[in-house]
Length: 468
Ligand code: SF4
Image 1: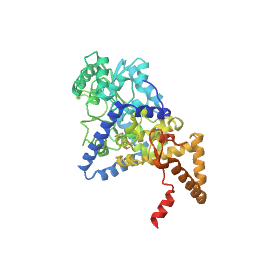
Image 2: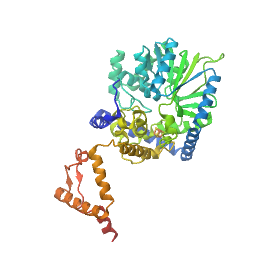
Image 3: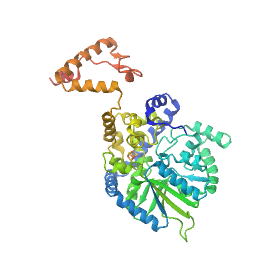
Image 4: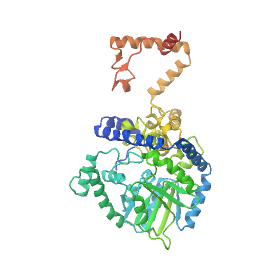
């Protein structure tokens, strides 16, 4: 997989905007999930009250995170499993590889996990002689394509059916299949065999239940269930904020999750796993491990970004973001994309590397409006913009422009005089056409469209005239 960082966002975004196949794929998100969400919410009058409840649950957990994590660890141990703490991605990778090696694993099946993506697990396992096989259809597709997921819920939403047909035909050595159900059938046939061969199953977790030490996963394909149930060793890799006190809180959040993600009332499969197989269980692993990843999250708990830890990874903020819907997920160069990625990526990569992402927002506020746990995403992106400014990361031209602006904006007389001259000059330059095709320092705008010229008067003067 090609390693990318958020720093190249501008270049990748320009390439994405010129890609007609991607535009078609993104159009299907724009037309699909937001409408399905709106229909699902219209059928649930208490949805807003549920969002408040969801936010309260997550805030309560974050205020008592240490307590719930310890309780979870005790409960997992009591059920016969093991908990491993990982401070960062490297520690998590080493822990998981160690478990795989002790199990003598050569192949592992994986169900979709953003945390596994975050720690770069597949590349690490492969480099150490263990073959990971993704079992979620979208993840399987992008694994074959050597790509990263481009969406939290639909990792391969950026690909067209024609691209997937060609990919399957090349990798499976089969004739090109035209119909989506034929493609699904082909993937199912290949993956069935892989499930049987796997020595270890690795899953993520949607929720961790502190009271019982259980792990809750949701899928629409049933692949997490086969990944849990067939191999002798199971590893769950999850971040620390996935914890909730009891099953009751998990179900409240599950009601928000499916509706916000895909407009379903509930995902097709919701599975609860507790510890290894017991004597009278029909199936299940002999060994059960949970790897709990921090990777900068405990530092977020006491800081300005704390509310970001409420995220339940529904993807609604992506589906409603005009920037994401124009450039897709790969432009972000990060595991986490869209508005939530613009807040989380600087935590993972550092603001020096991820500075373009909080800038890639029109601040229209749609992300905050649809977030099921009411995360104030624009305010958090603004936090990072201010942080980048404090650390002097903006280019000198931008810093000069901002200083000039501040100088003018704090001197009203000078401001009015300067803007009146500028407005008249722009109107003169535009002439009868009423628009400018080019303007120094405004290339970002005029590169793709004309700049409508002002009417020759400032905003203040126009308002003044209307008020008279
Ligand atoms: S930030 Fe909110 S809307 Fe976006 S993925 Fe997380 S929970 Fe969903």
